[in-house]
Amino acid sequence: MNIDIIFKIAAVGLITAIVNQILKKAEKEEIATLTTLAGLVIVLLLIVDMIAQLFNSLKTLFGLF
Image (cartoon, rainbow, N blue to C red):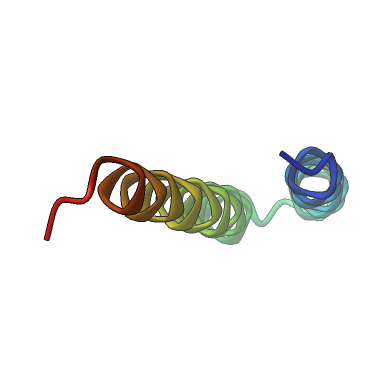
């Protein structure tokens, strides 16, 4: 397993947190909430892709189709 995925998740989290704080200071709470949800969706898509790769690896390992 590569450590790149951990760095990608951390980067998305940091960018989301910074944008969230900037928007809250500008009194744009609704948009800040949407950016937080967008960051969460991006991370979930990364994780779902990893799980799909895991299942494909397991199928090839055990010879299942």
